[in-house]
Length: 432
Image 1 (cartoon, rainbow, N blue to C red):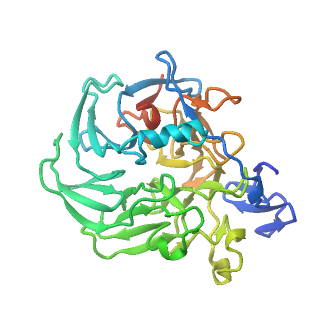
Image 2 (image 1 turned 120 degrees about the horizontal axis):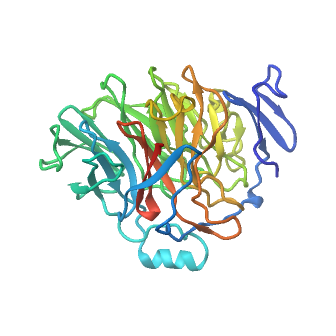
Image 3 (image 1 turned 90 degrees about the horizontal axis):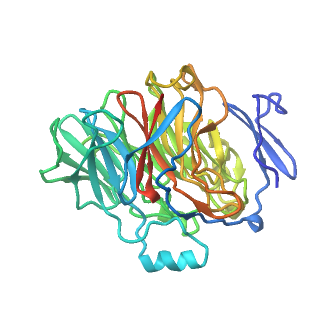
């Protein structure tokens, strides 16, 4: 099976979007062409990681000229992070809910050594770095009693949090370190999901008039029936009071990261694609989201490639499928998405996208387990993904990893935070 190959735009393509053979197809994207092997369900492999934790003297590795330190540690499953208006950090503690016994059984069978056992913490912490030394000195329980929280945002005097089963709103005023008022659910969402598709992210449009909610699929490729996927594999748009819901982007198997390209009204998302079609299918991706656009799931992938498990079911949709902008590698579990708008990092990073890649399991060799960087120019991707934060994998021979990155966040000083859920650490990356 051929590996994904990135070339400069237009290679082998002339004026065609696809050049197909019995072995592969070549798709033109905004960063060039990508070669996709033929789907092969029999070739699907698994290699589950085993998290051993970070030694005290070890950190992830950033490019030369950067420094990495522990901003906060000793938490259980820090997933998403946002800033308050005062520059404090809110971190959602949540995870897939498997018992310790289930995780141990999976570990013995070599299936899922990187799972976080037990009930989800279901809390949001407030972290404060008062002396601005790059380490949070205090932490406060900001909000508890949630149900697998992930997305968070502040709009005026309201704090929004997306649980797996709905979006809630709480009274908030600037400077609050604890939410004390009663919350109100403004919209129900379909709960749970395949693997970690329980996450529900939130973002406001640039003028803060609309709310966008990501809802991943409840399956790998609609194996439980498409009827079970109502309002799923979508980005939903609604008013901040929960009314006026419409599907903003569809056919997005598991959109997690949400961000507006700087200086634009273009929404981008990071998407996990489907499993069990081979080592190099299907590429995860980041893409701009066209309002009302359809990106293929579950019937098609990466353009007009039909999923063989659903062959012939929806030929009417084939010509409606949009091609994602930037392939990020198959099975990388690309989750977090951030456009860098600071000035601390060198000029090449300004306006570009950082993508947290949690790491593979449906592959014979590891992929992901890094924070990738995608260069942008004039609001458009200008090159293929490259390493930014690495060192999460102990070695290629074993299954051992130190941790798994999730979400990046830019601090007011231009440094970067990255959550590492399975190790319970939030890393800070700064330019020396």
